[in-house]
Image (tube, rainbow over all chains, first blue to last red):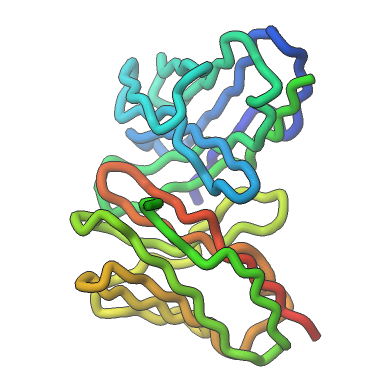
Length: 113
Length: 107
């Protein structure tokens, strides 16, 4: 089974802090994704990566950056956290082949106070 | 127009009922289609892929109509454990998720 592990289930931070969300997958998948999920809006893609050191902006990259130094790890960074970044953050991975589904981590519920 | 649209529900049905969810997508070049299930405060999990010829997995049947850009999920003989939010997912270069349809199955 694919295992996607996110570093924290729940996280509380303060406005202006730099926040790191970590994601690790153990299936040697090329593709990794970060989403946020908010009520009524569904999942929105923040950033994704098709390979090591490669990143692409998704639909809502503002206020976020990412890092993919190793194939198995994809980090999401909130440069200066704001209250509107309070959300559920979900990491996913998939193989390179286009018809394969994504597998998700458990999610991190982030609250910015 | 949203790329993937679903009826948000909620659908409240009794045990044993048959329920159908619909989903439309806007990009005709989309290549892969999936239904995910998401329980409250949990991550989405793949329920089934959707193939052009339609496919069935136990009580679940998925259909794809490329001409109408329409996907459906049919659940027969609903169980209490089917209560969840069902996400329609469409893939071109990346995955596009619908906002989900919430189902509650009641005794």
